[in-house]
Image 1 (cartoon, one colour):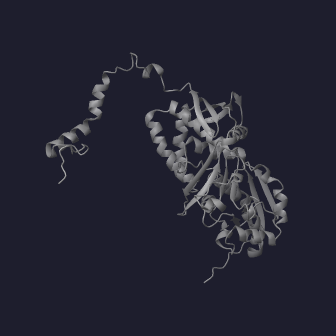
Image 2 (cartoon, helix red, strand yellow):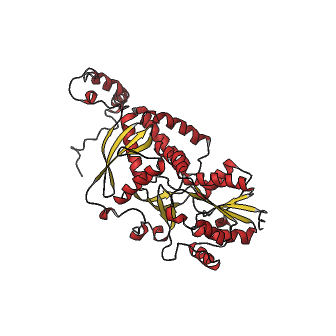
Image 3 (cartoon, one colour):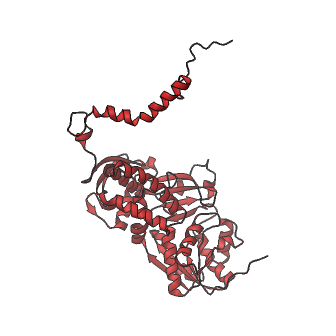
Length: 422
């Protein structure tokens, strides 16, 4: 039994100008008979934005918004995630994940401004982005209808989408020979699909559109100093930068030295594994610097607990749960931890590596006179004996009880010296 389509008069489409969203414009008009308004967030896609408005109109859209959200992206989404130490499955710095809630938030605002009754996105029915877009819409305006063409249309792959684009004269970058699914913003460049679908295949060299191959990077290391104030990066080599310029400058350095390439097989929210190859040059540098400063300035208990927070924060961001009370609560915890994260970190960039070369802070908890082996007034080495006895008391009691019962502890290696074969 087929389900009838809802009556839609006006729809706002999250539009990138890529293959999927390009063909969605005529598809929405053909299948819903609705007016289509495109919205593209400028998150640092560079030349991908060239001619975007004209292309959307030529494809059948009545209007196209292109808005610069780069500063908001970094200040309200990227930096808080970095400050939380959030990394998904050890490698992924969440470049696509935290872009989606911002795009969807602004898409909802435009839909309300334009009096639209629906929004649409180009995420596939197998991926994570459909969840990220739709959870945001549900959280911000649950009355809006959500259209996900990949879950409705007969297009079953990128070749079909290319054929549809050709039928409606929509120019696209993708080809059958170079058929990656890409996402680019100021933070990263991602690639999926094509030859990457076999995890045994090495990523093709021509796939890396951003970073220099580490083998071809300069033979001399380059030093860079990053100053943070309350966990937020503000200066590079002593020079002040706003968020956008700062990340752009670090990207240039990272690109030059082949920094930030990641090849990961990750667990998607929908239950399957997928392979992604990411380039995050400036972000990799920032994460390393921020982590180094936290090691210097956070006490042991806070630092260890924050590692657990980082895991949960990454999971929430990856799963599209940005607009949730838990994420806000975790942000409150993180903001407290960032109050003393002020100082400078010196890094050495060399052939794909980000090497820590120095760090200093007025809030440093490290004191050379405390850790020295020489005599000092703070730490009496003789006190360690009592501490060790108390710290190890549960282990000692357990071993004593086992010896009384069996004659040895469970960790004791049996003596086979007298064992003889028959």
